[in-house]
Amino acid sequence: MNLEGKAALVTGSAVGVGRAVVLDLARRGCNVVVNYSRSRQEAEQTAAEAERLGVRALCLQADVRRDDQVRRMAQEAVKAFGGLDVLVNNAGVTRFIPHADLEAVSDEDWDYIFDTNVRGTFYATRAALPALREGTGGAIVNLSSVAGVYSIGSSVPYCASKAAIGSMTVALARALAPKVRVNAVAPGFVDTRWWQEHPNYEAAKQAAEAATPLGRVCTAADVSKVVLDLITSEMITGQVVVVDGGMGIARGL
Image 1 (cartoon, rainbow, N blue to C red):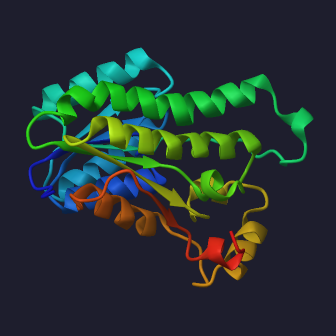
Image 2: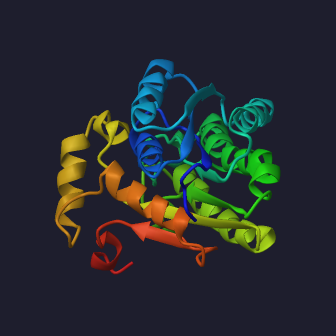
């Protein structure tokens, strides 16, 4: 897919991996929607940086847990750009809860994580689908995680949610072909603010680096490169691509 003049919606794209994807799309000449839930100022900064790269950028607030807000966002994106060619489902949340402490996991934890990560991915896909099916066809990339592949990560609900995204990706790829391709990226430890705000950040990062054959953790740019590859590679669909520097093979997973 040639991205010049195309339009993309990236959920949760004010900061981190989403921001990196927005800017990489802009560098390819793709107009972008920067979605945010609460981080308006950072979303506007990301949009301004995208516009400096010569494309149109639109900031749209929507909580991906709310179907009505997601549908409105998709409609506004199509109205602004005349269509939609790419959807990147990046918005995601977690809670840090030891896996063995099942009593510490509340119903609210399950609802918060699944409503954002799983329902949010589905809602955005459903809302964007009519536009993605038009023209020469569209591409969807979902953000999963090694937590959903190897069942390691911040909490059991998070692992389950990311595994659900992987399964949904394959089901949607089969259902939406040939007009729409659907793939997912499953990053390992990504050095973004999301991790940097964790109280054990330094220790966790050092442990991840020591366990990774390539000797470092992922950056947002590393993940974004793979997202862009999956968007533009027209013969790939239904794949969950792990981006972890080899951490999984080192652990025998």
